[in-house]
Length: 102
Image (cartoon, rainbow, N blue to C red):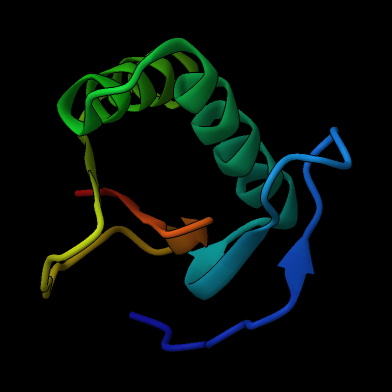
């Protein structure tokens, strides 16, 4: 697992939308942006963290094949093993998103 912290902000399409802040990533730039876009769309559709996570997982399974895992929340710890180039951990506002493939 590559532990590369990236604190650069990525702006969402809307100026008023909160920025995504990537905390740790081992993923292509294109997939990183798609992760943020899918998460942002999920936040617009759902209010419950479990539903947000389920929507993101379904989208990743559909686009990139199965065995994706998604955790969404404000307070959790984690320690996961992932496939190379298939991990991202970021925040949108105060909500954390952990997405990985195993």
